[in-house]
Length: 260
Ligand SMILES: C[S@@+](CC[C@H](N)C(=O)[O-])C[C@H]1O[C@@H](n2cnc3c(N)ncnc32)[C@H](O)[C@@H]1O
Image 1 (tube, rainbow, N blue to C red):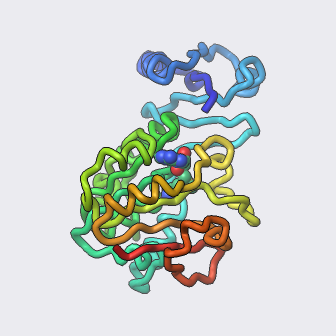
Image 2: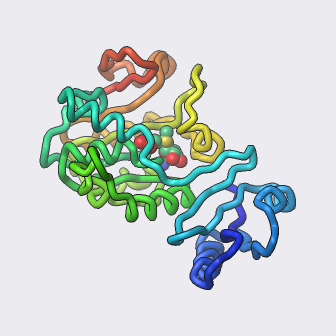
Image 3: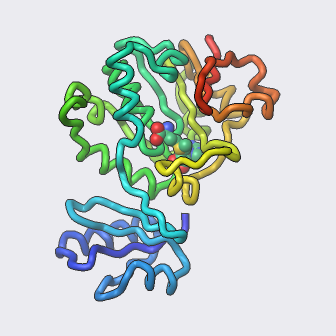
């Protein structure tokens, strides 16, 4: 992802220090904020602008004017539905039980990983290829404390172990049958509907679909199931998904799974 980094308008010395440290880590330009607007920085550099703010949280301002920051999105509603009904499509496709381990190969905002951690009560390893998204989500998870009705899930963020890597490269180095479930949720292919939560993602995230090579590695590494979240109609586009089962769904999202 192409970006430059700056701070809030009134930065503390700690924020400036952190912005400079991240500039070096990501090999991107540090821009002194002074009285400049985010818009003027975007215009000058023609790149997304990553901002170090309060509590050293990160917000990415995308070129088209959207903001990407950590928030648990649909996790909240999915968790409450799961608690109320005992059913959730992803959990059923995974056949996930307490004590089982999950490797989430597309961490993104960690909404799926949070739900998996809530159910398994075990560490969920979450792989994210984009270093900026990884950093936004890693520190977001460190600070996220589910409250109110969601307090029952306050342990879940602590169980997620974010890993900045390409999922294929990571899988290649794992022993056979080392996770109970290996899970993919690549960016949807040409979605027909608009989703506000995913709009900033669509602009900046890595858009790779799961390749046959990656899937073969996942089937070697998973002990129980490999699960892929897709939008409706995608299964037919990839002949190598023909031996995957389809979890029926009334929404635009479908889960494909293979029992190993
Ligand atoms: C649709 S989002 C995942 C949403 C996520 N499951 C959630 O619950 O918020 C897909 C994510 O996978 C990442 N990604 C794409 N290709 C990848 C790869 N080869 N390895 C690791 N991460 C990848 C993207 O950068 C993006 O953040």
